[in-house]
Image 1 (cartoon, rainbow, N blue to C red):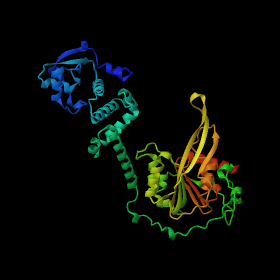
Image 2 (tube, rainbow, N blue to C red):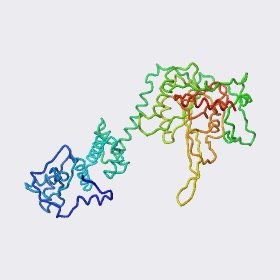
Image 3 (cartoon, helix red, strand yellow):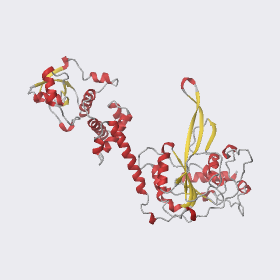
Image 4 (cartoon, one colour):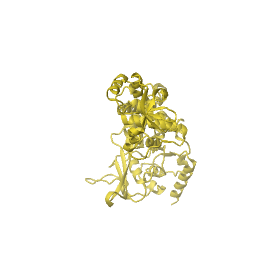
Length: 480
C-alpha cells in the first residue's frame, strides 16, 4: 500500500519527483481515465499546453498506477499529447493498491502544482473524508487532516463551506474568489440561519399571546426601606465581602426588618424544588407568575449549532415566557462572555430591556506554573445578563456590579458562591418577590434567595438524583 512518510511536505513531494531513470514511455492507448473520480473537473488551455510541450518538451511526466494503468495525475498533459497525435507519453509508474492510494497520489500532485481551483480542492478533501468515514466508523476529522497534511482549522473550514455549496446558496458561495472569502460568507449564512431559527420559535402572532399592559398602567411596588443605609461620606462595602453565613435559618430571616406583618413561615426543603424538566414545566401557565427569574444553563458548545442545549433552553424561555413570568419582572441569566451579545439580542427580540452593563463574577485560582518557572494566578470569569420586562423596579440599589472571591487553590467550581449570589440577588429580591431558578447548579442560589426573604422560592431540577441530593443538603443546612 502506498504510504506517505510522516515528515515534511518537501519529503512527501520527493515521491513525485524521481529521476529520469524512473520514467517510462507509456503507450497512450493503454492509459485508463475514470473521469467521475478525477479531482480536476475542468481541463482548460489544452492547446497552449500542447504548444509548450511541442516547443520545449514535457517537463513533468504523468503518474500512472502500474497495476491498473489508471491515470493518477496529469490529465491535461495527456490530453495535450493526444492533441499532438503522440502515441506515447513519459510516465512515472507507482504501486497504488487501493482507490485511497490513488486519491492521495493525485491530491499530492495537484497540491504540489497548485493545479486545482479552491472549489475542486474543496470537493476532493470532503470526498476523501466521507469515503474514509464510510469505510471506518471510527474515522475522525483529525485523521483526515493528518492524512492530507492539513491543519484541523483548515479542514473545518472546508467541511463548512462544502455543506453550504450543497444548498440554495451554492451559486453565491462558488462565485467567491478564494476559499477564505467563501468561508466568511458561509459563516454569515450560518449566523443568519441560527437567528432565523430562534425567531421562528417566537410566536409570530402577538394577538394570540397575553397582552402586556403598558408600563404606565402598572403601579410601582411600594419599596421597603433598605436593610442598611450608607452613612454620610462612608462607602458601604458590598455584601459579598462580609462573609455572611451560607445557612439561611429562621432566626436570621426573622431578625431582618423587611416590613412583614408576621414572622417568616418556614419552608420545607422538599417544597423548594420541582422535579420537572424546564421544557415541560414552561408549557403550563403558573397560577402566580414569577417576577425574578434566575438561571445558570450549560455554556454553548458551539457558535452556530441550532440544537445546542443552551440555545434550546433560550428558545423555550422566550417562547413560553408568558406562562410563568410576570408582565413586570427581572431576569438574571449567566452566559459565556463570547455569547453575551447574541443572547442579549435574542432577549431583546422577545421584549426584554437589557441592562447596559452585565454582572461579573471572577475568581483567581492558583498559583499555577507558567513559563520560566514563574507562578501566576489563573483568572476565571462568569457573566450574567440582566433583563427587565415591563415597569419592574429594583428592590434596592447596590454598590458593585463585579463580585470577586479571594484566591483559591481548589479547582474551579461550577457553582457560583453563596456570597456572590446573595450580593447580586439583593438588588432584585424583597418580601414580595416570587423567585424561580430554571437551571440550578447546586443549592447556593436557593439559600441566597431565601436569605433575602422573598414571598416564594422555587427551583427546577429534572434529574431525580440531584433533586434528592439538593433536598438532603438543604435539610442538613436547616438542622445546623
